[in-house]
Image (cartoon, rainbow, N blue to C red):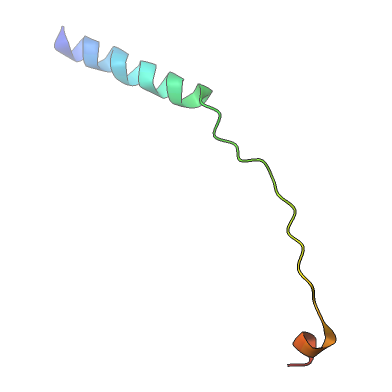
Length: 40
């Protein structure tokens, strides 16, 4: 009986993990590039 309860808990936990929103919104990264930096 305990084994079945543990199995149900693990399956429920995996289902909960699949529904959690973990996606991070993308951010635009802009960086100045000068000719001096390219010459090195």
